[in-house]
Amino acid sequence: MIDRQAEKIIEILKKEHSYYKDLLELSNKKKSIVIESKLPELDKIVKIEQNMIFDLGQLEKEREKELVQLCSMLQLDVKTNITELAKHLPQHFAEQLKVLQKALGTTISELQNVNNVNGQLIQQSLDYIEYSVNMITSAGPANSLYEDLKPTKQGMDNKKRLFDTKV
Image (tube, rainbow, N blue to C red; front, side):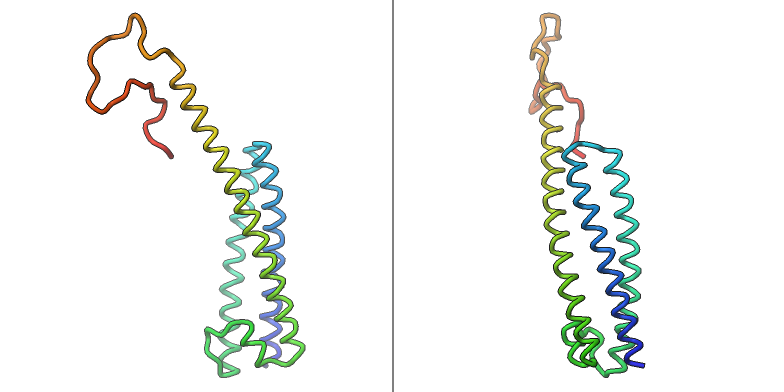
């Protein structure tokens, strides 16, 4: 019974690792799409990522449920981590868990790095857009010959504004 439960957890972890590898691949594609400013493709990738993250959440719930059952069989605390769990399982299961733990850690770390780069690229794009909008809205002469010369409200500048707030 313990072997069957351990196998279930290992299979779930393999599925999770597969999802994370796919997310990493999508994030790498996203990086080139952001650089090339292909917004419709970016939107498609974000939707795919959202679905994958939802599926990962479901797998995580399933893994937690199976882990609780295995921990109760082994008389361990339900908050036991993979490293501690591996100490209480037969050698072949312990080795598989350690390999999966390392692979998951590496993949998640790579995914975080790529996502950080993507976030910086998106922020640079937003900064450029804001700069461009500011340049466009302040491009005209400050005072025109036919402009009303009434005093402005206190604290208000004479700059034309396209948007009142940042999104």
